[in-house]
Image (tube, rainbow, N blue to C red; front, side, top):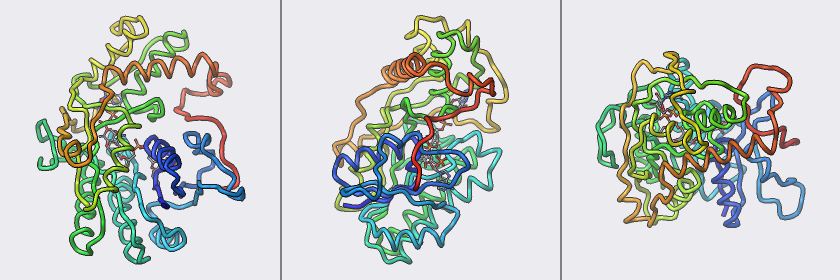
Length: 349
Ligand code: NAP
Ligand code: F7E
């Protein structure tokens, strides 16, 4: 089996690449050219493409470049395509709405159209999001109406519908995974869970004194990312394309997550958490709590790790990372505390 993953350098892409390589797939990943290395999450999977038996291949490309996508689909001729690439930060989508619409929304259409134009007979997975439900109250499932509350949510709703349209219009095997928040030690540092667990580790180590957050009242259903990529794969093993929610069904406020994370490190969160309005959004999604019973019935998928355990996994990982790696390079050279993932990595791709 041969798979193409867009967004392979992201949290989910890295876990999915691991899963598929473990199953014996040949894995092709789309990566963006950047002036710095952006492959920190997949460096441990790197294989010299010249070596016999190499199974991981990376290709430069971008979801904004339709011609490149057609060329790659022709060249790779995959059995499965996972479209995980996106500008995935909700707050940033208010700052960059046009770019978010172009990559997160229209990018999905470009990839579907590339599959169609290249005449590739493959299964297509679209990384749809619970953000599409937005203001519709929980619990949310596959039948819940969408009411997006951000340019990101609106772009994902477009991508969802265009995926269904290619399924219905062209008979393509195109499936939407509607995933609720899922996190891990590889989560980007500016999403709230990782921002919190990283702050816990740094405050405990004496590197920071406080962490500034926005709305602590938002309710989310946070699961563990490695389990969710298993769900993505299961969706594409079904006989027919369909749409599936993946979620834990639990509900935690941001405040609950903060309290659990600080408590796990033996600290009282109220001494360290401060409010900064810059982290508020023009429109907030108050509550997302998923009902994943369809995925359980049809795919046998169920979330095992609940949010409190997830918080502890992430705190432990961030504490361990600081203990074993020492202070990150950007602390040592006195630069601002930018989010940086991993170390210099793959060359020659
Ligand atoms: P992530 O860590 O932010 O990764 C996003 C990936 O997309 C990165 O590899 C990024 O490349 C790539 N990308 C960004 N813009 C691109 C473009 N124009 N062309 C090609 N690639 C581009 O996101 P994630 O958490 O792994 O999520 C994976 C997907 O699931 C995303 O589509 C996200 O919107 C969706 N989703 C996530 C969640 C969640 O809770 N994690 C829930 C529902 C849906 P760089 O590394 O170069 O930036
Ligand atoms: O915010 C609140 C914030 O940015 C969660 C993406 O993966 O999941 C993610 O989107 C909540 C929001 O994730 C801060 O207002 C408070 O209510 O971690 P987040 P998100 O917006 O839920 C969905 C399903 C996706 O599809 C997205 O790709 O936390 N919050 N204070 C904060 N959020 C951030 N980032 N930073 C704060 O300081």
